[in-house]
Image (tube, helix red, strand yellow):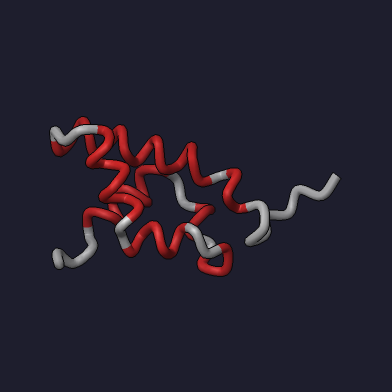
Length: 74
């Protein structure tokens, strides 16, 4: 069985990570889950996360959340 993470199967890991980050945003920022999901998908962190070569998929939810919070405000 091949368990290598590739660009073609990376999408399988993303929902769980996105869900965890969104829950943190809801708790910490008091925003809706929908707004949290939108913020994540529009972020630079997500752009890095969805690209296998960056290896952001290896980061845990807390590290990804902190990355999101440290992004410059547009």
